[in-house]
Amino acid sequence: MTAGLHLGETMRAAVDLLKKRPGFRHLWFGNVISQLGDWIGWVAVAVLALHSGGGPLDVAVVFAAHHLPAALLTPVSGALADRFDRRRVLIVVSLLLAVTTAAMALAAVASSLAVLEGLLVLRSAMSAFFAPAERAVLPRVVERDELLLAGVFDAGSWSVVFSIGMALGGLLTMLGPTLALAIDAFTFLLAAAIFARLPPVRPDRGARPPKRVAMAAELAEALRYLGGHGGLRQAILAKGPLALAGGAAWLALTVNAEALLGAALGFGLLNAVRGVGAGLGPMMVVKTLGRGGDRQRVWSMVYAAGLAGMVAFALAETAVAGLLAAVVWGIGAGGNWVLSSERIAALGPDRLQARLNSIDLIAMLGGQTLGVVALAIWIDGGHSAASGVAILAGFALASWTLLSRGARTPLLSAPGVNRSAAH
Image 1 (cartoon, rainbow, N blue to C red):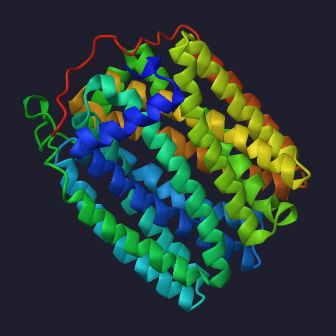
Image 2 (image 1 turned 120 degrees about the horizontal axis):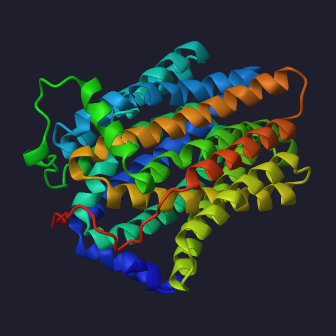
């Protein structure tokens, strides 16, 4: 359905989808509120690390604290979300994140970076239980032929929220990180209230694994399923290589932000512009597919564009060059995100949705963290950030070529698991 729509029609259809599917509306709105606070808080923590006299390695430690615990716990969280009501998981996790973020605000008042980083690790661990459950809800609140449209709209709104959150986070952090973190905590409370309006989203009872089955066995089941489905395997592993180069490019952005535009404001603005690109990418994908573009070719083009934008940003010496490169970077990352996520939702059975998405998240979060740490060590060794980003981008492009070789990417109308939207 979506592939034949132009940009204006796509946005009108997305608004109609919000009106028609209350479950999708509540899921989307709760996520938007949560993300807004998250990006505001993230700017505060990153800038605090820089202002405390830290260099690239210190920023890398903060990044790892924000992402690595989530990556390590995602297999467990995916298995849990395939056992229990995913709506309840979203509510409980949002409330726990609100409490933890409020404690982070108090640590910021006391100017205790060590305590703040410790709480950040705890928060990251808790957040691991959110994303697999949230992604597993989507195929249950829209129809199968609405998945791509829902993904494009979600990516577009993520772009807007990311841009606003980063820019606003930069401004609020200039007033003090405590305010930014307090706002972040409140958004989690508000998101929990919105998720409470979702209908129950229990996994398919007919295929629901008995609670006595070990989580390792449940994850192994998902891996076995993945091994026999080439198109799904490509979709799930697509984000990892791009995230590896993207993590390095993000560190380059963090380090170069002050020279290009000023510390807090530059960090927020450059990320905001990247977010704009991430919203444009999915819409460009839909328009190209609507004109009869080959899905695999389009996917490879946006992948290459994202990597080219990362390298160009790392090489940028002026604010204008940096802003333009950040847009291209975002276009590629956003296009890859929506194509990958739509394929996972469309091809994965409901009983495995959270676990399959957890594998996707492991690859993405692990890749980002490895990219940040690798570039920090590279810079600390006296090398330029641009050369490090270029090396990782080359590795990512080679990885994508291997993933694409022989992989069958089905059309949107390919046979799949039937799902009914929760009304």
